[in-house]
Figure (cartoon, each protein chain N blue to C red):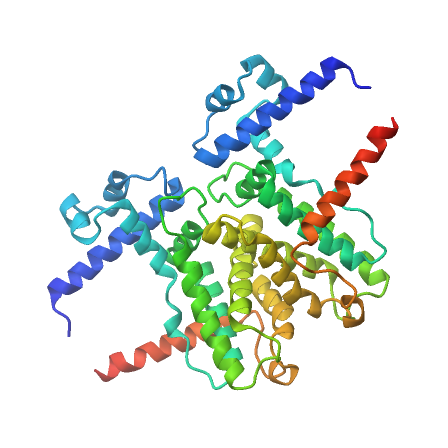
Length: 222
Length: 222
C-alpha cells in the first residue's frame, strides 16, 4: 500500500499536469505562462517547482500523457496488437483530455523551444516494433520495411485525427481511423492474416474495457 | 494587358497576404494582430482595409494560398493525375512559404474563430473528383468508395507533412509522401494500372517544372 504522502504527491503532480494541459490547449504553448498554470492548478509555487522546473518540463509531462500504449493486451497476432494499439489511442484521444492535449501540443508548430519529435519517435518505435514482430511471424507481405511503414502509419494517424478534430471535434474519429487502417493494411499484411483481424470502429472501446478489467485484477488481489 | 492600377492593387494584396502569412506563422492566428501585419506589410491602414475587412478575412486569404491544384496538367490516367496533384502540393509545401502558412493555419487548433474546414473540404473534393473519374475509367478496385478514400488521403497527407515538419523541417517531405502513396494506392487502384504510374519522390518537382512551361505558353502567345 503506498504511503499517503506519496499518494498526495502523485495527486498534486496530476493536478498540475491537468491544469497545464488546459492552459496549453487554451493559449498555445508559446503564449502560456507558469502563473496561469499555477492559478488554474490551485497549488503553491513551491509545489509546482518541486515537480517541474520550467514550462518546457510541464509541456514534456503533457506530451507524455499519450504514452500509455502498454495497456494493450498482448495478442498472438501482432497485426491485431498493432490495430488494437492504434484504435485504443483513437478512443483515448476522443475521451481523455490529457491525451488530447498531448497530441495537440505535438502538432503545435509554434512550440519551437519544445522537442515535439518525442511522441512521433516513440509512436514510430512502438509501431515499428510490432511490425517487426509481425514480420518475424510471417504476417507481412515480403517487401515491407517495418520502420518505413511505421513512419507512414504514425504520420497518417496524426493527420486523420487533426482532420477529425477540425471538421467535427473528434465525433467521427473511430470511423476515420478504421478507414485509414482498411486502406493501409492491405499493402502491408497478408490477406490470409487480415481476414481474421478486427478493424471495425468499435475496436478501440472494446480494447479499452478489456484493459480496464486487466488493470483491475492485480488491484483486487493485493 | 492589365492596367498599371490593377497591377498595383494585385501587388499590394499579395504583399499584405505575404505579411499576414509571416505574422500568423510567427505568432499564431489568435495572438496575431492587424497592426503587426500592417507594420510588416509596409502598407497604409486604408490599403489593408480596402482588401481585407478583418483578421479572419486575412486568414482566409492565407488559407486560400494552398488552392493551386488547377496547375496540374490533365492526364489520361486519372490515378497519375491524383498522384501529380498530391506530389505537386508536397513540392510546393516544401518550397513556397505561402502554401506552408496556409497548411499550418489549417492545422492551428486554437484558431477557433476561423473556419479551418475549408482546405480539408476542398482537397477532399479535388481528390474525390479525381477518384470518381478514375473509377469511371475502370482504374480502381471494385470496392472503393471515392469519397471515403479521398478523406483518408487528405487526412493522411496532413499528418505526414506535419510529421516531416516536426522531425526535419520538411527536408524528407517528398520521400514521406511517396511512401504514403505506395502504402495507400495498392488498396485503391488496380495493380495493372499502378505499374505504369510514377510514384517516385521526384515527381512533384517534375510536375512543377511542367506546369511552369505550361503557364508560360499563353503568356508568350498573347
